[in-house]
Image 1 (cartoon, helix red, strand yellow):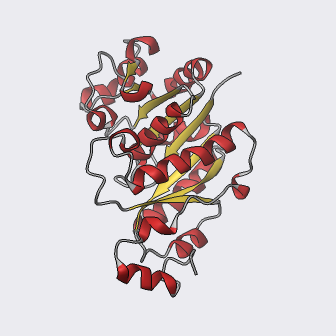
Image 2: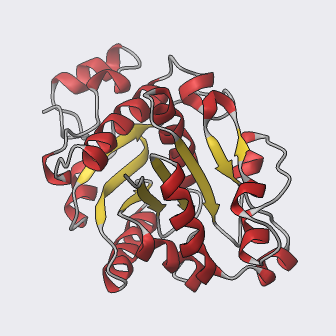
Length: 267
């Protein structure tokens, strides 16, 4: 049985796409699913840097015809496999995004889950991963511009026959108007990732800051995605990943939550 390909996308850079890919991969690997993460952000690849790994070959070299998929596979903490990228303009110029489809086809035969980390914007290299995935997870922060760009990315995904399974809002606090953000989406909101000042460890937090609320959120998100990927649970029926306790930092927060707060889901 072929593996599930999930593209993790968003319209704006810096919203948490790579962090989400890494931590979901770590949680799924811990749950027994053989998982690979591909850095398909060809213009601003940062997967290798985030994980602090040395890799012999890159996705850019594969797409340029200078390396095979096997050459570029790199194991990292917890058994997760990665294919990292390069940051040079020369590597970007030589890489052919159209060849990514063949790379993903190869990986889905060998892995249970293939997570494709994408770049920001509406360029050709960011569009290709949208059309080749079984499902697309759209990631945003509460920032108005990021939310608006995520909506545009969803519209682009529909144009290339991509299937959006849901959205994720990162860096959420108790004051975030999550319900308002969800109202802007024409796809299900699968969950939130809390802003976590305690999660200062290196990535993936699921392994290196296992007791943090962010790590807890990513583990719960992975469980929901597994149900969608492998148990045919419709995204609209999936449990929303959110926990009131993530947002209780002091007595003042507790008092706000008892009156509903702005967050909305606890009213």
